[in-house]
Image (cartoon, rainbow, N blue to C red; front, side):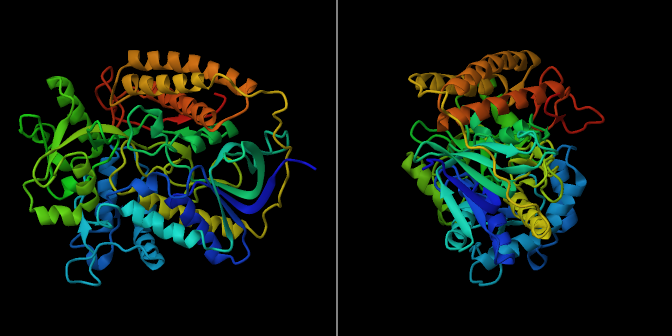
Length: 538
């Protein structure tokens, strides 16, 4: 009897955040016969969606207060520093209302105005000209994630596999067959340590971003760029990988690392201050604390370096304490555990890697360069974010493009080719590693190299140093991968090294400073600028 395990489905969805679960529910609710598998690398509740605090941007008629869809489009284009694709911005913003209404129907309980059962409380964040952010206190992502999980895990057509780590996509090209169509994946069952085959007619990458490539990040442990790396190895183009967004304000604390402090704090009046209590954002931008994230992050970084300070400070303590506790209950409690009462004192803050603005190139259907392979959410490059993502457009992108992908898949399902099986994973020629410490050492070195040389402020010399170290690490890991049985840590390191290589190559190609890519060797913006597109095998 074979000890190999194989599964099959109509649609395989890799990732269980807002993008993946929205796609699964949209497909299942429209087709009562469709068979879906959702893969989660960790527990289904883990991932970036659950950590999102601020909210979801949408202009919705009665709540607009002189706002407009055109204004939301304009704000997004401005924040993207001239590199957004206008068609993608318009498509996303015009579908925002429908996305919010769907979430409300699914059961997401957005905050409402005092003494109202129908009027929603909207907040404002950096880059936005109006209050248009739907939110659930300061834990919007968790509210969205919990709601979608409750619907998905009880759905008879959706099978959720937790603690499964996809190794690679399997395509017709890799098997020497005509064309380049995705057939499924090899996946590591982390509970058994065995590799399984999953065959699918359609596959969707909903794996999130790659901020774990940096030493300091707001993201969870699963954000290792797996989908981008797998798509690249399978033959997909990627774009704008140099634009890594650093969230300006994360908690600086020895007891609680990487806790994001929502931009909604600044939207409600929180001020950025130096250690001596003086403000500094008016010196950098007329929009002050509500400038886009790239501007604020560079300002904080510059002040820290100029003063030799470990952190700057975010102060909302001048506001009414009841207002603070009501609107930011989770931030209040989390800071209190770290010994900081935000109703009485400023919060020490530092920037940290937060969002991958580039990714796998897709069209309006979320379709990649490979037939029947989709990419939705932070893993993708739609053209929405340009050189800098505007706050609260991220979950919105997940919702809009998941719905678009679902429509496209449903339209093709009846005429799509059937399941194609491929050979089982062969690990008969490899052994168990007795040097796992090598993986841990290389992991730490890579993340520190990226933080030191490919961070908020870059130079050509730093980028070239980073490229040299990444090339050496890639060689070491390739040899390790070929000789030892795979592990979760090895798979993530392999993917992160691929991501680091793509980021550095993209940054070296951009001969200007724009948005999130600031290079002191090219301090000015070019008059005409285009996305940085990398093509495999070139």
